[in-house]
Length: 295
Image (cartoon, rainbow, N blue to C red):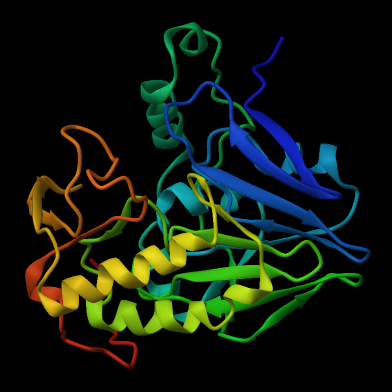
């Protein structure tokens, strides 16, 4: 008997939240079915054949769109032949290409609980991270599923090409990692904080169009946007808490709001928080794609 790698919850009619079973990552993706096709929003980490699982939920053709190009959001893409991605993250996506299914399997075994490890087999549930077709999307684009339209809103910050997607039928905002309780702006391809603030204000312009935010790792109230704007504005003004921590890469970073020891929770009880490095508060502001040597 094979392993069941996924579970799902129908959060609205023909709208599913999908997670891995048995893994240590809380990454989440979403499948939205329309009259003409279904849209898969993110594809989590590549453990299990997500395409085959989605085909148990819908008999419609499936298009894949990624909120950004981090590996815990694009890992399942490689069971498909394409994805849609904001143009500013396409180069970053290409850096993920070339990982063998053996490496993906090894990573999966490391993450799996003990009761899963002996049952895992290197089979069609794992795929090489080979090149696939990438179609660029831009702010204001729409996915027309036939009986519902899902709008692309650009909110660059976490990565240069981060987007959110608004389903106007359900009034859901699928927001990836654009704005959450642990928004990381400490990476090389993160945008300057002052640019992120501008993009949050752009998201604020759409806030009346949705009632809930379904993120890549958590579900949030729309007030998260207001907390984000307030907190990020303090960083720009130099009045934030400057809570020092070790970042994802092990180097020192700041969190904008003071955190409880060894926890994500803020000391003041609010929810949004953000990591950053001081030298990227004000710039450099890049309004164009810069193409260099692949890293």
